[in-house]
Length: 421
Length: 190
Image (tube, rainbow over all chains, first blue to last red; front, side):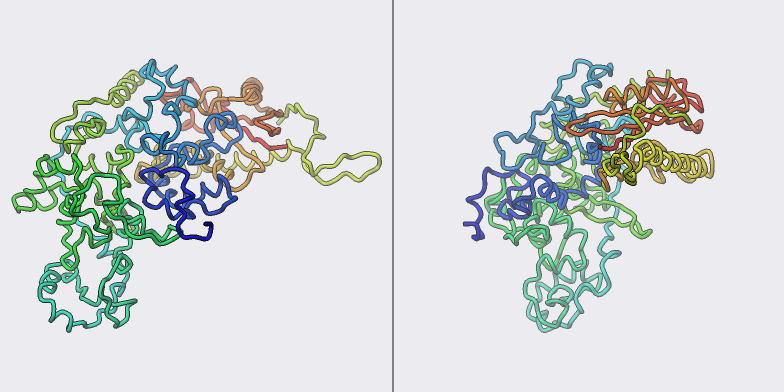
C-alpha cells in the first residue's frame, strides 16, 4: 500500500476546491512523514510565497514570531497557514478555504470594534466577509487608498487595453527551435499553412520548426506541448501552471499528473467539452493561435455557469462584440480574459512589459484582488467594491448597477474629514 | 547614561559560570551589556537612516524618494524610519531566535504596538518618567523566561514628531523633538 502509486486510500477527506485536482500528488504537500507543521508550511510557501509577497500580505509569519505575541498564538497560531486553512476538512471549510470560525479577526483586533466610532456594534464575523478587509491582501481596501481614490466617476470610457509584448521582448533568442525547414510537411497541410500565415508566429518569423522540433533538433515533433510553448512564453506558462487550468502540469508537483478535464472539475461545464484535456492548445487552438478567440470563445466553449452564459448579453460582452466586429476601437472591448486573465504591465530591465496573467485564480479569490488590476482600469474604486460585493450582479455578469453598497469608503472619508477639522 | 538594573549584574547567560571558591570566572557577558550593545547598533542605524537617507533624499532634501507609510504602493516610495526599524526586527527574527526586538509606545499609532506585558508597561513608563535611563526586567512569556530591556526612543527630527502628531490614529498630538516617543524592547531568552 505504501509503495503503490495510488495513494487514494490515504485520503482522510476531500481536498478543497484549490487542491482537489492535485490531491493524488500527496508528497507535494506531505514532503516529510515526520516534518510536522514546518514541513507543511514549507510546502505551502513553495507554491504560494510569491503571491503572498505580491499581495503585500498583511499578516506574514514574521509579524507573529515575537514572543510578546505568545498569548495570541495560543488562540490562532498565525505562523502557520494550516492553522486557518486545514486541508481535507470539507465539512468545516468555508469561503477562501478557511476552516476556522469567521470571527478570527476579533481575537486580536477587538479594540477597533470597541474604540472606532464607525465600527461600534459591528458583528464579530463581518470584518473579512463584508467587502472591507481581507486577512492577506488589502491593497485595494486600505484606508488611505480608499480616501485617495474617492469621488471618482463610476466609469472611464476611454480606457484602451495595452498591447501585449511579453513574448516579443522577453523570449530568449533562438528559443523557438532552430527553425529547421520542415517544408515537406507544409505542402501536405495547406489548411494548416493558411492558419499559420494568419498567426502572430508567422509575423514574428516563427516557422514550423519553431514548435515542431524536438529539443531544438531536426527531429520532427508531431504534437508540441506545454514545454515547447514555454520556450518562448515562460511567463504565460508559469501562470497557467499556477492556476486551475494547468496546475496538474506544474513542476512543483511531486509526480506528473494527467491534464485536468472539465469532467474532473467542480464547476458547471458544457457536455461537449467534458473530456477536453487542458493545455495551451485547448484555448489557443493550434496554428492560428488566435488570442481574441482564446480570450472569450476559449472560455465559453467549456464554462457553462450562469455568469459565463450571461457574458455575451452583458455590457462587457457587448463591447467585446463591437470591437470584434470592427465597430469599436481595438482594445476597447472587455473579454472574459480582460478580467480573469488580465494584461499586467510591469517594468523589467527598464522595459515596459505587458503580459497576460494566465493564472485565472490570481485575482479571483477573494474577488477584491480583482479591483486594482482589473476593475479600476475602467471603473471607480467605490463602484468596483460595490459591484464585487453584489452576488446577483456577478451572476448576471455585471448587467446593471450594484444593488449593494459597502460603506468602507464613506467611513474613511468621514474619519478623514473629522481629522482635518 | 544611568541604568536602572532590576537584576544583579551577576546575572548572565548560561555560558557564565558561578565565580567563587578561587575558581577562575568563566567568560561571559552580562545581559545588560549584551542588550545595550544591540541597542547601540539599532539606534545608530536608525538615526543614520533618518538623517542620511530620509531627510537627505526625501521632500526636505533632494526630494527624490517619498517616505510613506504605504511605501510599497508609491513610485519611489521609501520606508518610514519606524518601518525600517521593524523590517530589521523581522529580518533578524528570520535569522535567529537568540533575541528579538520591537518598537513600542504608550501612544502607539498602531494599537498592536502598545505595551502588552507588565514588564513592557513598567519599562515604557519608566523611560518616560526617567529621561536618559533604561529599564531592565525579567518576565515569563509562554514557557520561556526572558531578560527584557527597554530603551528610550527619542524624537531625533521634526519629521518624527510632525508625522506622529498629525496622524489620524495618534493618541498624542504634542510630541516635540527630544521627547521620548516610545521604547525599543529587546528580549533575550534565559
